[in-house]
Image (cartoon, rainbow, N blue to C red; front, top):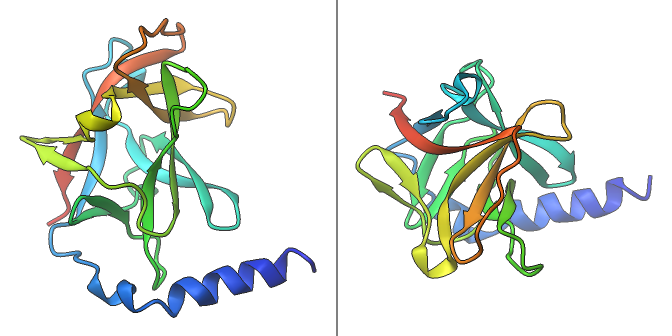
Length: 170
């Protein structure tokens, strides 16, 4: 029961926000992996894997029906998870001197700095973005990470550098 009260408070606070009405969903698309050396990491779509109240890890699946549409709201990447409040890409903060960090899809607008460059989704170079990484990780499915450009990465054999290709939904 202690879990439900904070969850209800979070949902009501976000849902009551007047900013929610400003969401632009006119150009929705799916994010699909490409360019991996391991073909099993290509043609995978991004979806939200629930890890807690308002929290999700960015995971990947071959099933487009599991994927969630994305749209850019300014420079934030907003996912349609079927609710009235926004869900945005939250890039793991590089605070532990790691060369790669997890990507989450959490309640709220998420991080700024996203853009579509040609047919791929990019994040801000000012934040040290060095590309996308897919790893077979601890949820027993491919998980999305981002590479920190300024620290050389030793990529585990279960991982591949990839592009996130934009596939428009209409």
